[in-house]
Length: 410
Image (cartoon, rainbow, N blue to C red):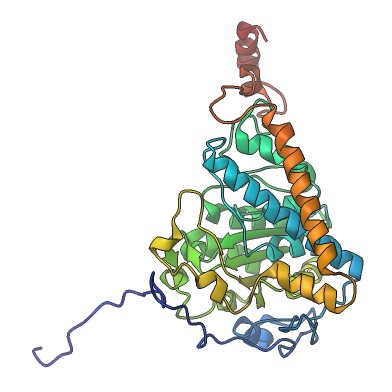
C-alpha cells in the first residue's frame, strides 16, 4: 500500500488569466476549404471525422473556398451583413440603456452574430426556433420589430409578454421563436419534442435549438440527443461554443477532452464542427442539416466554434477571469468584418457602403428606442394593466377565472 502512487485530482484551468498574453498558436484549426462535404444521406459513423475538424469557407483575404461554399448571391450576403450590423447596433444601445438604469439586465451577442443570422437565412420562416439568450439575431433577421423587443426589455406598458418574462427572454409564435428559458438546457428536449410532434403529424416544418458549451454538461443535453437519435427527429441541435459559460471556461464542461461536436457520435448523430465566425460556413453547415432533416434522415448536432467578445451579461466583469485583450487575439476574427471583406472582394460592397449601412442600423435602433421609451422604462411604474394577467393562459378561460376577472371589474 505504501508503494502505490498517491491519487490526485485534476482541476482544469484556462490557458490565459488576467495579465497573461493571449496565445492561440497551439489551437488546431482546419484550413479554409479543406474539410470534405459528405452527401446528405451519409451515415453518422462514416463522417465522424467532421466532429474533430473545423468547417471553414472564408480565408484571411475574404475569399470563399472549398466544397462547403454555399455560393450565395450578393443580395443575400448584403442582407446577412446588414442583419448582423443591426444586431450589433441593437446590442450596443440596449447595453447603454441598462447602464442608464432603464432596464435591469441585458446580454450582448458581440462576436457571435453570424450564428443566429446565417442560420435564420438557412431555415424556413415556418421552422420553430428554441433559442438561448444570445440569438437575438434570429428575431432581427426574421423581421421582428425592434420596438417590440425593446418594450419587453424595458418591461413597459406595451411589453408583448406582459411582464411574464425577464428582459431579453423574447417570445414570438408568429416569428417561430419559442420562449427563451433561463435554464437553457430545457430548450434542447423541448425542441426535440416539437420536432417529433411535427413528424408525427406529417408536417413539413423542422425545429432548431441553441445552447452554450457549458449546458452540454447538463442532463437535458443527453436526454435530447437520445430521443433525437432514436426517433430520427427533424431537429438541428446547435452548441454555441463561445469558450465561456459565465466565468467558467469550456474545459470545465469537458471541452479540453474532446470537441463538443464529438458528443453526438456516441448517440449515432451526425456531428459537424463549424467556424462560428464564418457566415458562409455557418449557413452551409445549417443548410446541410436542414436538407437532412427535411429528408427524414434525422437530427444533426452542430458545434459553432466562436468567441464571446463581451461579458456574459451586464452583471459580469470578464476582466476578472480572462485577459482584457483576449477577444482581439481570437484567431477566427470578427464575423462582421469577415463577411464585409468577402463582399468587397466580390466588388459587391465598399467601405463607404459599410459606413452608410452602419449609420442606417444605428438610426433604425435609435428611432425604435425613442418609440419604446415613450411607453416607459424600468422604474417608471408604467406596466401592463392588471387585467392582462387573465390573457394568453387558457384557450378557453375557466369559470373561476371569469368570475375573478368580473370581480376586478375588467
